[in-house]
Picture 1 (cartoon, rainbow, N blue to C red):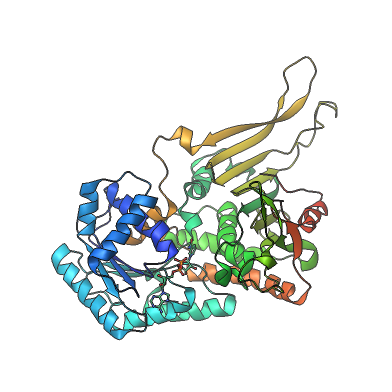
Picture 2: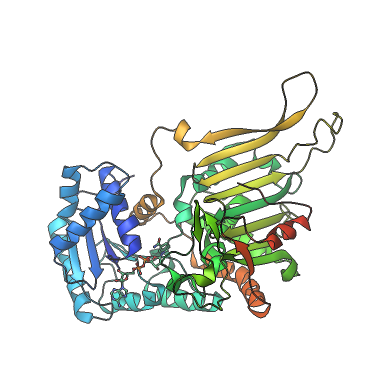
Length: 491
Ligand code: NAD
């Protein structure tokens, strides 16, 4: 589907996200013919730039980060629709200029009053920018056209602040006009969870407590906090990753079939999962947080979290978190969902592993199957997007020995077209008004209801456990699963 007449205004256009992801994604969409001919891109930031300077910055970012090849004619057409507004978020004059630019583009490029405002800015500025849009008449669409606001995580710091943020947003925009970016939902494999479950017959019959032993959802990074100390300290891995990405992945894995593939139906089913989540009674036994200590990674010695630049040496911020959750409904009662995330772990990988129960009976003697693992279906979200099914198979030879083998589906091998970047998909969806892949405020609030008690418990009890950089997290996390008679996968 091609977007209709429209424009995109990016606030915070000099930031990291805009440069590495948003501007390249806009170009890639244009290059794939998915943007309308008069598409316009307006940048807003504090630099003293002219339109030409801005176009040059976009050009450089596209040359460096775009996924598709550079084509001069595509670039020229896009560049003609670029405007830059210099100013602070508090500057009324700049917002007047923005309004004038939008009206001028409506006339010169035929954007028809249809605009998305992308707030790629530090979260503390969300309220300010939104209020300025309202004050300067930019939030209200002229008759027959639309206005949309796009915001980035974090969506608050806890339930209370998330509610406050949602209130500010909804004072200005209707809930349907607000698009919250969870870029994981833009990834092909994540959307494929739904395709696999609901377009096929063979998985759904076993997708329940009668066959599934447990589910493990992992997002592991092999890097530390880099230059983002100011953002990360005081937030930590659970707020940064579990509250949004991992709980969304869990909701897609556990939800019932939606009555249709549309935003409202998906919301209804995801919300039911989040509302059914039950926390373990003993949070000390069933949650773990950690902090990376120094260690070796990629052949180099790396410092611990508390030695990183800009980090308070007494910080209790978690860089690793693991939690055990259950979904209290007929399909999942008693099946644990283990969620974990961390920085400076052994490998960069995101996956969802649905691990099945053992066969109830085996006609082979126990030596035949002693090395056999449980059956598992693993969605690989990144890298090497695809899916693996693990099962036992006979080892060639005379004796009956059974070992694990895997059957693999890799996107790169089955489809010739490379997968679009998550941001391409999500920006296009915003312009199309398709909200399927965007969490709504109810989901955000339900997710905080799950995380808040855990964070409060951690606040009151001790410090995060240390783990060596390059390892797979603190030993306490292994013990947490061992108590349940299970173990973490080593992806
Ligand atoms: P950043 O700090 O690099 O950029 C923020 C932008 O806002 C800059 O252009 C800055 O100049 C501008 N800005 C700040 N104060 C301003 C003011 N008073 N007036 C005008 N402009 C002002 O941040 P970022 O990394 O690009 O992230 C942007 C948003 O995306 C944040 O909400 C962040 O949490 C979120 N996010 C970023 C990433 C990422 O990969 N960088 C990933 C997920 C979410």
